[in-house]
Amino acid sequence: MIVLFSFLQLTITFIYIWINTWSLGYLGVYFLVMFNLLISTFLIWWDVYLIWLNSTFFEYILFFWAELGNNVHIYVQFKSDFFGTLLSFVMVSGALFVITFVFIDMWDDKEGCSFLVNLGFFLIFMLIVANSSNLIFFYLGWEGIAFTSLFLINFWCDRVRGIKASFKVFVINKIGDFFFLLLISLLINLIGDVDFDTINISTVFLLNYKYRIGSFNIPCVEVLGIILVLSGCVKSSQYGFHIWLLEAMEAPLGASALMHSSTLVVAGLVLIFRLNSILELSGWAQILMYVLGIVSATMGSLIACFQFELKVIMAYSTISNMGYMFMLCAVGAYFEMFIIMIIHAYIKIFLFLVVGGIMLHCGGCQDLRWMGGLFLYIPTLAVSYLIGGICLIGLPYWSGYYCKFYIWYAITDSSILLRGGEYFLLVSYILTFFYVCRTGYLVFLGPKNGHRRIYINKPTSLLYIYDLLLLGIIILFMGTFWVNLVDSNYSYLTGSLYYKSFTFFQYINYELSYLSLYLWVIVYLIITIFFTFWLVFSLNFTWNIFKYWFYITLFLNILFLIIF
Image 1 (cartoon, one colour):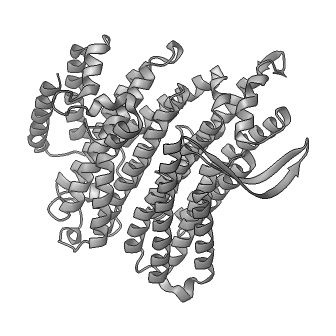
Image 2 (image 1 turned 180 degrees about the vertical axis):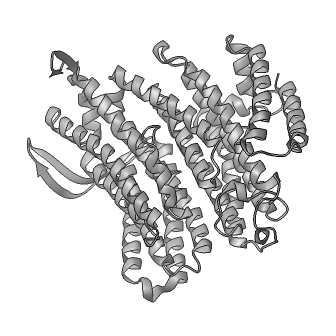
């Protein structure tokens, strides 16, 4: 009931702001939005605690909506369970941090109020996606986030690039919408209901049904599973359908932070999770999803190593992490997928806010080739990037470390038909280290290549610093929170910091014989040689890079000696 109340509260608030924008003013709109988001964050967190404590869920029917053929009744119905409620909390709390940055970023923009309203409606439709109880109501939120994202991407409508980007996003997302509508039609025809729970219960009775296509008899569940995966992979920007995510970078940075963290890109995963019984009964769909996840995880991190725009690097990082989540769904590790979804959301919001601060300091520039040597001028952002980068890489006992452990444990413990992906995971982890270090070096430690106006000390907003500080604390200790309070199966990871350190690497060395110490040494030597020459020749650096790389290599050698 609390989530429903928060949804209605936010809906009424943003409609009121939309009608009275000019009378409230930018400051009034900001404080009204922040006040309501704070209330909603507290209420939803209380609902999460109650649901987790009592191990229960609730469903609320607002009103009867429509009746389709075959006696199918459609209700506007909310489902308040642990998954949807916690995802709602992540979205609303993440929006708090993003809107604080938007307030600073768009202070002098005459359309700043309109942007806040668009962002609010985008959040409302995403709450429908997270808490809907049937496919039709879910589709309303699905189309709502696509519709509002077009306004956010084309917010600066006088830019030709923005118009082209919004059109491309619209066209590519229609592919996923087509598969989703096809899935809804088939389920109504076969089951006669659109409720998620009814579909999951009734799917087992479809095992004997087959579609005749030409001379082939294809099991009905296989067709439904493949259509489900295709509809989800477009919205979750898997490799091959990822172009729209790159074009979405034309949106203001606040919108990009929400789209790439906890809202738009996770909608496909939410759909797959809600209809997980179809996926579990479809072997070909699991294989397709697993392959898509492997390709996205590897190619996303590989391409990010050779990009020069900050927001594009973050976009490919998102594609890589969505690939991890697809792999976990394919092997049935839904709980691990959900944990990684939450941790990744906060880390990516934090990194986007850091990128936004860098762009503000550089006058809107996001090209790495026009930066360098900014550590002395924006040390707060340099330290913040270090924290976010370490969390994304997965240094032991930081939040990303638990993500890496969950993924590795689930993949290596999966079916023999889905084995082999751990090698691609290892490559993706190494490449993640590459592009995080490369970006940090070129922005903060590299030679000064930018305009002289960026090499002056500018005052940083205290509100922005507090925003980064609070979010940084969250991403630092979030992994430990999940391990100790929610998932007791992995609680030994934080049992003793000194006697059980680097558990993930110990697990690889002592329990997985095919990834022995010798293989790690070979991999490390290859990394050292490749990364050194790659850094030198990718941007025609001077030979002074070897001076810095010597210290980095020395540090990594000491680190590996400690680990092994």
